[in-house]
Length: 242
Image: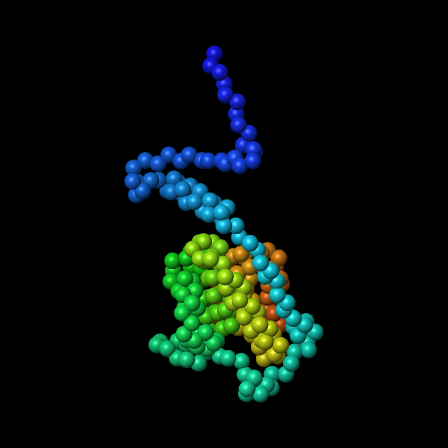
């Protein structure tokens, strides 16, 4: 009777677990399931070696004007006017980078391309239904750049974390607060778009508490607008139910 070697305790300090995947032929001949498992193992190894350190992402947003009716008058001086897209491009499109202070920032354009060029499945649906084209003309642009920065660092793992996503998210929050403080814009389509984009970002980074806060706020804003029927933009309505 052959001697049986005692099994090693996998829980011992320093022990590693390995999975052997049989590969045959060249890469093009591998079945989809094998390729999926190879990618899954590679991604798991990367995330184990580069763990995602959660940063403080909570920001305070004063929604009192929406709740108690103490919204400021919309008769603001011209110097206090909020920025609007004005730079006209081909096909009557505007340049959001000029409109919202990003100018010739190459990094901002890089983040936008990552979201919009169709190579990222995380954003494809919103691009295809036209929501991203709608949101790019609003203060939601900063939140979209934040989502793109987070995706490059924490999902694809192809860039180092510099806190860029948090910086863009803060810009978006500050702009949203300005809109909420005005009776003219507190329940506008632009605010709906910005809050909806923030909710999508919370869903992307898997923050259910933050997601619910945005959805509760969105529900309140829609009540003030007169319900979902007050949204006349098809891409906005599609994104709302998506």
